[in-house]
Structure formats: C-alpha cells, structure tokens
Image 1: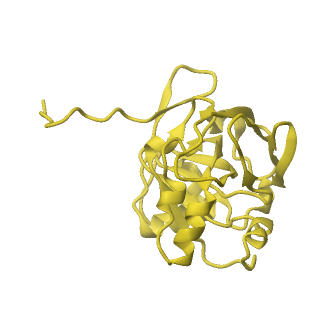
Image 2: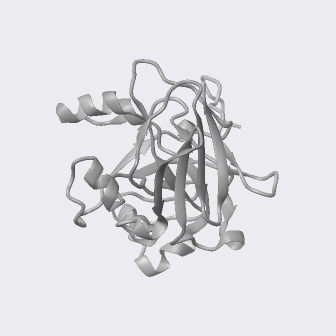
Length: 228
C-alpha cells in the first residue's frame, strides 16, 4: 500500500440519473465560441476557424444546485452548455469512431468572471482566473448514451428569474461533438473520466446573488441553480 505524505484529495464524483453510481472526473476541456451567434456577440467572426479550448479543474464541477458568487468580481456571467462525459479515450481518434468513447451527457454552466477574463484578454494572458475558479461549473445528473442516445439537435435554454436569457439549438454548434473529441485527441491523450463542455449559445449575461438560473436541453431535462 502506497504511503502519501499528505491526505489524498477526494475524487470528483458526479451523479448519474436513475442510479446511485457516480462518474469520476479526470479532466475538463471547454471549447470557446462554438455557436456562431455567441461568437458575434463576443465581437468575433463566426466563420468556422480551428477550434480552441481552455480548461477548468475537475473540482470546479459542482452538482449541489448552488453557485456561490465568487470574490474579486462584479460581473459574473452565465454560459449554458452541453457537457459530454467520456468512458474511453486515446490519441488521434477518428471522427467516425468518436461517439463510441462517450458515456453520457449532462447540463452544465460555464460561469465566468467576465471582468477578470476581459482584463486577461487585453494583456494576452490565460483566462483561468476568469474561468477556473471554485464551483464555476454547475452540472446536472449525467444521462447515459443508453438512455438518451447522442443528442445532436434540440433546444438549449437558460432562464434567469423565469426570464429567457439564452436560447439556441444543439444543431447550431460550429464544431460537433465527434469533431471536438477527434480534435482534442490530436493534442491530448484523452481518457475515461474526461469531460468536454461544448460551448454556449448567444445571450450570455450577468447574475447577482439571489438569482435563480433554470437550464434545460430537449431530452436531458432541466436543472435549477441558485446564486448565493
């Protein structure tokens, strides 16, 4: 038995709908500007260009239903996204084999300290201070491929205090799930437990303490997250 010099950190385990089993998280990859309308609202050309990714930390994923408003920001935005959970990985995965690596899908939010992210962009620095803070990725229960298939179309929506702020369709993703998996595997060795946040439609905007966010995707149900 291996002796560790400090207490081993607890694994990140996410709930799976309809069962007591858990999904262990290894890495979290997030694609940027993957819906054309969102690219436009962020001031970028929506033409298809090579995808780019940033990372959140595994323990940023949070399934409690609460989002604590973070320190050092006064402009925190919601970004509703489809999360893709992998059951297998590898290098250089062909696009036509990519979906064989998917375990399931979930609702997720890529919460962003937009003011801090914007400051980093102006200085040409990485975004982690705006993206990878504590509990910055609320996530719902995972729905297995066996139960929902591979959703590639359907309404994605976010309401804040009952008002629709984000809406779109999964078929509007510029880079589809198989393409994201294949592209990532060219640059990283993907493994079981990896999670991909698949981008957000237009309508991102700020939240405040006391707000209630309700996200839904056709076929995947809904989740409610309270800003505390």
